[in-house]
Amino acid sequence: MSFDSSQALISYVEDHLLKANNLDISYIEKMLGRLNSTKIDFGDIYFQKKISESWSIDDQAVKNGSFSIDQGFGVRSVLGEKTALAYSDEINERALHQTVRAARSVSKQAGSGEAKIDFSKGYRVRIKDQFDPIGSMSRDLKVFILREMDSFARSLDPRVVQVMASLTSSDKEFLVANTDGTLAADVIPGVSLSCSVIVEENGVRENGSSASGKASDLNFFQEDVPVISMDFIRGISPDAVSGATEKRYLAIARDAVRNALVNLRARPVEAGELTVILASGWPAVLFHEAVGHGLEADAVRKSTSVFGGKIGEQVASPLCTVIDSGIISNGSGSFNVDSEGTPAQENVLIENGILKGYMYDRSNAMLMGAKSTGNGRRMDYDCCPIPRMTNTFLAPGTTPREDVIASADHGIYAVNFQGGQVDPSTGKFTFSMSEAYVIEKGQVLYPVKGATLIGNCIDALKQVSLVGNNLSFDRGSGACGKEGQSVRVGIGMPTIRLDSITVGGTKG
Image 1 (tube, one colour):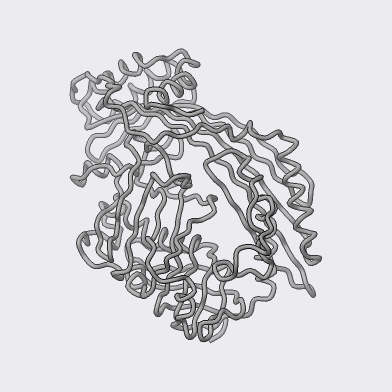
Image 2: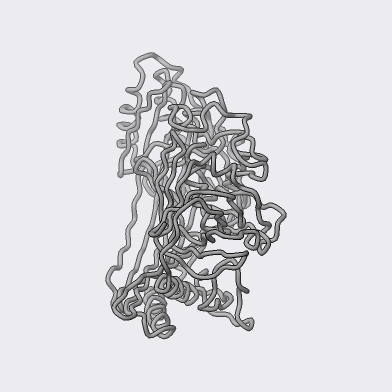
């Protein structure tokens, strides 16, 4: 199913969320007027319905199966720096009337009492297919795929002693009406599949994991993809072996085993100031954490960002252009409109090393004299929108990937990260590498363990001396947590070289 106009999409969500609960647009308009009967800067009513299902297995036994339907609405009013939020998990006229009354408490002054929804104002959306993530595959087939992943992982290497896999799918629909007359809706599907394995050799155990996801249905995991060699170091070797293919769900299991075996043969890492090559794709989590959060407007407004007051200044190497885009096709963090009804858009944050702008929601934009950039996102109806990233990436350069790697005389090639800590107010960060290799004279040699990157985000950005031409994004399973809210995001980057950065390790 596809929507040929914004009106069609709004009607679809209206039917699913409002009419099923004996509500209609005219009553929403009446309640917006009531919200405006006290003096506020703006307010909104946000309706949401989310259907979710998950399955998991451990050693071929089903350990968990769950299905849930969660729906409700939130009413928000904003006056200066004050925000009132009232919400209900019952969708009906009585509940809406009560929550509007509660949200009006942010102000004691009389307002206009007027709010008229203007469909022609609407919103500009990309036409987007409506998937059925949960119903696209039978439950028996879902469990079969998980068990096949277990069996396949064990068949790849006798050292595999435990396999865990999980499959989740969800479908989120929302409708938001603002006091400025905007009425917007969106449908956001999502599926993800993950696999973790434990390998053992001579009493030593290591684990490995892999995951993938997409704004699609579960048939995504049955697509054919190239077979990756078990000796494959991501980002270096050819992607396929003899042109062979396998189902994506098997490729995820294969990659988890490969990752565990890499960890099994990893050696202690040297500590010191080293050249570091970051692989394309997932290593962009470093930019997401160390740079992206500092460019969200709430951190800047509260003076807790190292990037505050630096618009127009050189904050990175001239080779660095950082973009946040909610309109990337099939991006993990893509959507038609944000949780406030603002159309998704592309925002250049850093251009050729110069800081160009921040990411705004409506509230922080109003307080800072700016406009929303379509980054006002909320996890659920009982949450307030806050500035959040969408798909954040470092734009590609012109250097071939192989030349970036070959440029390192002595250093570390970082392929994957498992987590880190960042202080946005100072820019200081520490990141742990879950897959990394020693480079000598331009050659990737052997894997290392216990490696961390330690530095300051602006200093690190200025150390970028080569940017590859091979931009790639994460595999679609990323989520970002902030202030207790978790939302799907995308991250991406090409292979890059950092001339010198502190690597923490287990030997000096």
